[in-house]
Length: 331
Image (tube, rainbow, N blue to C red; front, side, top):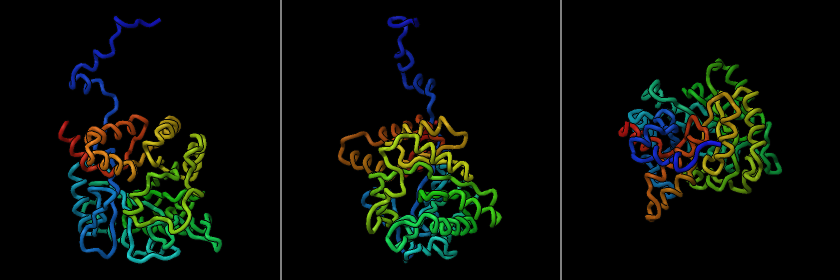
């Protein structure tokens, strides 16, 4: 039997801040963080989001300024979401060479290319007038296989505009394979795919839908996003399918409510694992802190540490720049 109290006293290694830092084995680094950014077509000033204090819909100009700040803070990457001026049933702006994301990507390549990884969310919900992640059948259901062709076209458009990583988030069956084939056929064999492999039909996306202006006009996305009530077995199956189709990294979304899924995936795969600390997680902390109910800075650090401890190599968070600056200041 191992020795116990009073010979063994775990508190010995917790006695001071310096000692706790010395023995810590979960460490965040600015380069592990990805900043989600929204860029909106046809606006002259950044538009603040009421549900996400500190987050804005950027103009092309303000996007560049914020990107430079992220580079200076040491953030590892940016992931771009577009809000077009006009939407239609097929999400035409998503793969338009003159679409907002493609134009903003070209701007970013010129301004910060090579200094930070430029990533793009690849989906249709921001671009369709119905707010769903794919094309619809006459009956109003999302047509999985027809949507794959749209995703393939969007991937190529984003790659041509300068994306260094594409991140398909629509949860269509076969999406990674369709995107990989299209990228390879267009000469982008070296462009990686970060697959939203375990994306759940979550209540924590509400503020994002204000930011991306993509709330479904009818129904919900439970028919294609994963059911929170399913065990990790389904998530592992989705991950395995995406890897078999050519994914280079995989993602869990949301993060905090799915730390068990994140841990199971991290223990199973040999590729980088990302987790998205989503808008609702951000908004809850900001709202509770504004009311004086929690210590904001400690809550931010604790949630990010939990995500890292559960196995995330990469964390998408709206606090990326703030946290990166804080980490640099304490090094």
